[in-house]
Image 1 (spheres, helix red, strand yellow):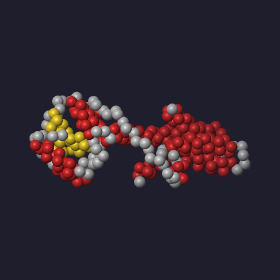
Image 2: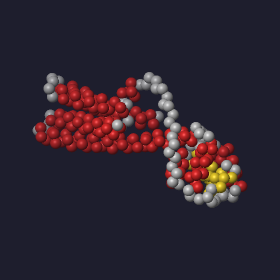
Image 3: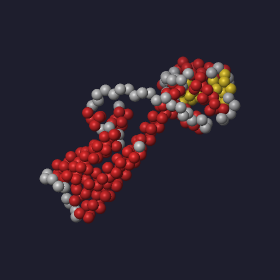
Length: 256
């Protein structure tokens, strides 16, 4: 369904850009030339907006996937995360569990997949436990990384060396071990209150509506008086459609 929707959006974008280009260029060039350059303009603009849209969608989809997987760890008993990591490490080598640490050779893994960052107190406790076991490396697998002081302290420790992984790197490690998490827990989205008119108007799902308006007004521009006004309306609708397709609201929200 999403693929069909994407194809329809692309087709409408191409048609709107072609009509706009044909009408605007038609004022300054012969009909055949105008159609030729309008087609080039439409294909080029549609191609680059599609690339931009895909580029925006991939990180967003990956982020949503990781959030669902992380939630499964966060809202499950602690034994779930510990057991999952142990099974993943077992695919590489024998694993021993001592004092809450998973030992693989001279490396100790501490599972900290809970709804908070690794703080200095947790780091000190796990470091002391790793020191007693005489390991060379301590890796803390966390859901949100470490607090600033914990991260800066971890960089200074050397016997054993310490590394704090956020969830993205933790997921990458588990995938490398051949045991990528697949269970997810999606949280119900919060009820949306009244937002600004601009944010509501520039939602991605509205792109098709703007494209339809752009095409219709361009068609009317050829057969009605004051066609320049229809062209202006069409151009505005087309710009709004392109802003919707590149998810300008999401980009602004991410920056703020």
